[in-house]
Amino acid sequence: MDKIASQVFCGKFRKIIGLEVKSNQGGYRVNTFVDEILVLLLTKASAMYIDLQNDDTICALATAAGMGAVALIRVSGKLSHAIASEIFKAAKPDFSIEKVQSHKLYFGQILDDEGFVDEVLLSFFRAPHSYTGEDAIEISCHGSVYIQQRLLKLLMAKGARLAEAGEFTMRAFRNGRFDLAQAEAVADLIASQSKAAHSLAVKQMRGGFSDRIKQLRTQLIDFAALIELELDFGEEDVEFADRNRFMELLTELKAEIGKLMDSFQAGNAIKNGIPVAIIGKPNVGKSTLLNAILNEEKAIVSDIPGTTRDTIEDTIIIEGHAFRFIDTAGLRESDDVIENLGIERTYSKIKGASVILYVCDLMSWDNSSAEEMLHEFRDFIKDENKHFILIGNKADLISETPSHFPEMVELETVFISAKRKENINLITHSLLKVARAMTFNQDTIVSNARHYNALQKAFAALEAVEQGFAQNLPTDLATIDIRAALYHLGTITGQISNDEILGSIFSKFCIGK
Ligand code: GDP
Image (cartoon, rainbow, N blue to C red; front, side, top):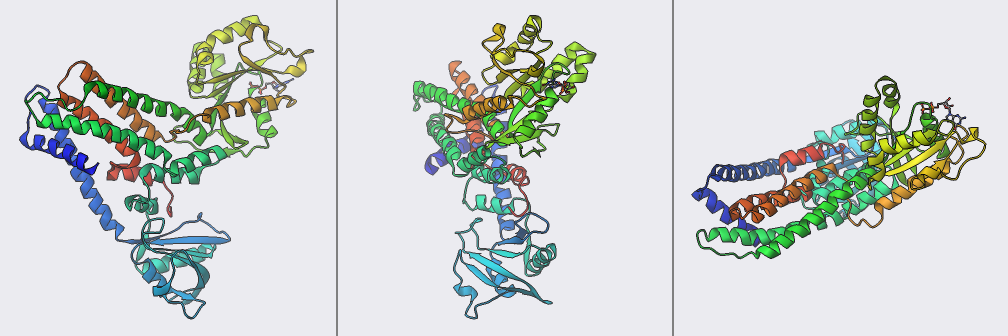
């Protein structure tokens, strides 16, 4: 594969040097190629800079900041074992740093210039068999903030420096311990709040998703190589790449990438909680229902400040699945002021929801309100990616609860009394059904917005290739789009990376990871 890649690259390089530009699209071609070279040079330069930084020995607190029973301090880099030999006095007299075994724990004391610091357990890792792929040590000390700080100061005095956010994982990536998508899964694993999010992160960490992307990319590279070879023959009218087979491949790749893109809604929902919107007219009992669900589940309620959300929402975990209840508080007022504006706001709020709970007050519900509702929300009711449930509330106020609304047999309907907390479990059962259906039959699920964006761009580039061939545009134009698709797929796993991409990914990690 390296051979093919270098062939492709050399072909392209000759064109850049020779500036084989004839047509009116020439300017664009030159710019694109020059840009690519610049990106390549910058990538190399940043890699060299990072390699220089990699020479440092880094240290950080790996456990949560603050007091705890124990704390763990990580040190990674060339000096780590030498530093250990200077500050650690093992309990066993025959201990020597040359003879330590990797992945073994040693008990002893940490001493600094002032004397005893703490009794600790020290573990040694020899390169390349450590998280970062470098020589490393981990110090388990008592969890006092004072001890943690004194230890870190001591490590720095001996030549280590404090690690940047995500630097341990960045080193692991750069040392080939895992690829970029797997590194990101580590962050997801740490952040996982539910069983479903946990298993998604574990799957990604084990490389299933990366393998899929790499396979897609390899298929495309094989064809790209043949097509670029054609360009090397310039005026001679040769076709090494079978166009029909290539069109088939494009269709297959687009279908695969499209499937992955489609899985993002589920992936995002699993990771951040399945978005549930509780909507309905004022005073039908929406707030009462939300409180009833929270109480019924004796839920772990947490506020997860989201990056894409402007509100903090109630998230609850039911049987390992997280549900995020979208705040619809603002809808009430707007309903009263200008009806149209109210509907618009309702729409924008529930657009992102996977589940819509439409609450109605059984006391005032009639045929015309049913028709109005069916009309107003017809798009969402029909939407296969949304689950619309009608909730007939205040059942305690009517003498006989119907089994369904005759005019809406098609719609899933649940009759409850939010106030008396009656039949709330029927709603949670429905929520769980939706959650299970989301993961059912999906072997690879995209849950990372960066991956989703890259897939979108790769998809668009493949579409451009397809259109180019359909319109018989010159082959060299197609190569630009093929390269773009390869580039975007490559950024997912880190086969293509630059400082900016890496910086934005790892800066989101915590220090010590
Ligand atoms: P929202 O405006 O839709 O959020 O409605 P609220 O939850 O604030 O409820 C409006 C009123 O209806 C309050 O007085 C609630 O106590 C009452 N309510 C809510 N659910 C029920 C119910 O199941 N039965 C009865 N009888 N009253 C309810």
